[in-house]
Structure formats: C-alpha cells, structure tokens
Image 1 (cartoon, rainbow, N blue to C red):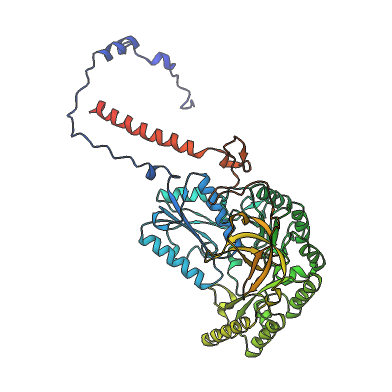
Image 2: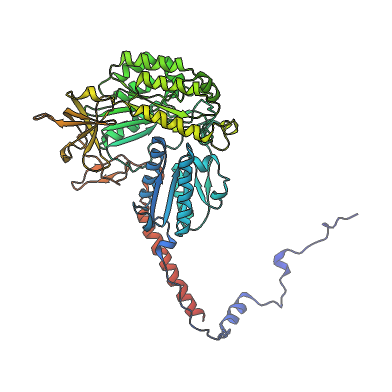
Length: 557
C-alpha cells in the first residue's frame, strides 16, 4: 500500500503559476501605490528626560555601619566599589537618594537601631539596600519584606544590587562563595575600598568560626570558618603600606582559629605580615577565643614582643564560672583563660589583655557572678566590655530559663562599678613612650595615638604628627587614656614615603598625580573599566533615542 508520502510533488519552482505576476511586475506595481494620509493627532509633548532616574551610578548614597571591625571593613569595601562605579558617597543622609544600612546582630539594641533606620528611610521616601548580619541571618523578617539585601559574602556585588534598587527593583544576594564545593572566606581582598581612616587598614583574615555558642546570632550569618590564603593577606597589607597606611588591624570572628581550614595557623600568618611592616608602622591583632590560642602561646608571645606589633590581645572570657561557660558552649574553662593571661603577662611584659563579660546569662547564679567579679579584681583588666545579656531570636539561649531583668541590670551595674573603681594607668605617669598618631579625639581637642601596648595617648593637635611615630613624656592619666607631651628635638618617624590617601579617596584604583605618575594599585576585574565614560555614553544614547522617537513621530503623523 503506497504511503502518504509516495505521491509526486512538483518542485517548488514549478508550483509558480504562469498567471502569477513576475518580480518585474511587482516592482512596477509598488511605484503606483499612494500612501493614505492619517488624521494628525494633537502634538504629543515628549516626556522630560531625567538622567539621574535613568542611569544608575549618578545618585548619592549614605551608608551607616553598626558593629565590629569586620563589619566596618565590609562597609569600606562596599563604599569603595560604589564610588568607583560613579556613585557619590555622602555624609548627609537627607541629601542621599539611597541609604545603605550595614547591620549588626550581636545585640538587640543594635538591631533596634537598624530597624528604626529602615523605617526612617522609608518615611523619607529613600531607596534602601540592607547589608550585614541581620538580613543574612533572618532575611524573612517582616520588616525586611520587599527590600534589597546584599549578603555578607556577596559584598563584591553591591553595585549590582544598588543599581537595581535605584531602578525600583528588589534584589537579594545571600549565597555563599565556594570553590570546588569548599566555602571561601568571602569577597576578594583586592576590591576598591574607602578607608574610614586613611591611616588604618582593616583586613579580615577569615570569616565565620568553629564554635557554636548558644547565645550567638553572628554564627547564623557568618557561618563556619573560612580563611583567606596567606599570600592574599600579605599582598593586601603590602598594598596598604604603599597607599600611606601606617596601622593595620587584623579582624575576624575569631582570629585564633585562622588557617585551621587551609592547613596553616595564625603565628605563620603573623610572621609573614611582620616582614612587610615598615619602620614607624604597627600591626594590631583582633579578637581570639581561648581554645585556639592555647596551643600557640609560645609563638604568640614572640610575635607580640616584636617592636612593630602591638602588645595587645582581646580574649573574651564571658564568665569566670565553668557552669555558665558550659551552658554557653564556650569549649574552655576559666582555668584555660587564666593560663592564656598568665602566660602572656609573664612572657610579654606590660601586655594589655582586653576581655568581654556577659552579665545575667540564663542560669547564672549569684555564686557564678561572684566568681566573675573575683576574676576582674584579680586581673584589673584595663579594657573590659560589659554586656547585659539579651536573648537573640533563634538561639538556644533564648529558649533557656532567663535571669530576671532587674537581676541582670543590677549585676551589670555592680560589675561596671568595680571596673571604674581602679585606674590602670597611674603608674605610667613620668614614662617616655613612642606612640603612633592615627586619629582625632571625639571632642576634637587632641590627636589620639597608641603606645606599644595599644594604650590610648592624647597628644597636642599638631598637623605634622598625623601618621607619625613620635616620642612623648606621659604627664597625666585617666580611666581610658594617658596624656603625652612631645619630647623636644625628637624626630618623628614616618612609616611610608607615600602620602596617605585623602579622606573619601578610593583605594585600589590607579590615579594619576599632577606630575603624571600613578598612585595606587592597579584595579582588577570589572573596575578596570571607566564606568564614568560608559555612563556618559549611555546618557548620550538615551538622549539620541528620545530625539529619534520624536522625529519618527513627526514623520508618522
């Protein structure tokens, strides 16, 4: 039986009828067509073009950061990328088109300020982008609905999120950065940044931690430990000194745990960094928990004795009661903390040990609290961060039986009174010290410097002292400071022959100086493109498209 496909079909060329018009006939017919005129409508008024509303990157941005030095480092990177992309960072929230709010989840009051700032921005009809640990840990909170979020490991994409927020879109980037399935420390360290203080570089050496403290919300946001490679950190430090920085802060959720995930350790990193520190510059180590510093005490003592490393260590104890520490899941006992402090005080004479204490943790008895008071009496910590316990939603501690509010308040008050009952610096009066000048005091009456032990020394506001190491004679002490008088005929030491960047200037971009030389590191990735030029081209194309539309409208009608 023949199939349906067996029938003969003429070639397509043979299917044209002899009666069909030839191509020549069709061409001649076109010439006789007369277009019919349409009735002209009322002249349309073209919509006025607003460059700022059409081209992302031309707006003003105000950024507010809460929390730790790690969060501040993230904020500096976000500001740098935005400025490098053409956005103008402003210190005036009222003139900003968009607010970038970089949050902290450690305490309830910090989150309350964050929430109130969101409400205030919305009341003022500002665009809003959220960053930091609060939205990363709890992105589904009611007050975050409909708002753009940049995750703590996605800060290298802040420009994308802000671009979309400016257009009125809501974007959320909350994923983790991985390489071959392994979690990375976060965004690249060579991104553009705007240092809050051009003399101080904050370097995050790792993100996350190895603990699971029952009160901590930060773990929900920052996750498990992920360390940056040593070479990347050394390169970042080297670049910083080339840009006039004279002080480096190493930061993370737990610096002592650095390297455990990549086969190295903190002392190994520190010795590499010490090789890069020029004379007149200093390195400050951030917070470390007791368990991960115990096995490195010998090497840590040697590093902290180095003349270009501050003899300073922040080791949070949180409580001197083993029972409370167990409920906190801190993974050490009070004796471990004492071992760290005693060893370092013996091997690093004059070292400053700073610590944290939580008052009123669930289950804390009066006897537990008395143990903590006794520890403070014993060590008379010169720097003590006292925190009344706040249950953070979603943490195990929030489900424990709470200490009465009035008891927590009373214990916080009692510990604060003990801390303020002694002056740790009276014996320093009359000493001659070398201090590094990096900041201005809150009252703008002095410059702030730090001595070898990272004790705050107030010196006269002499512009020539900025960024220099000078000699002073200590003549006065207070609870949190010393006052120093510059030694006559003492020559200040400058850490770098390169002048520091101006406040607000972007680090990591090649900038041409008046003499034609380049200043700053060569940019990498997408920031090697001159986005200002691209914006100008985009604006020109937008105007040209509008003019073409008007022209076509006139011809059409």
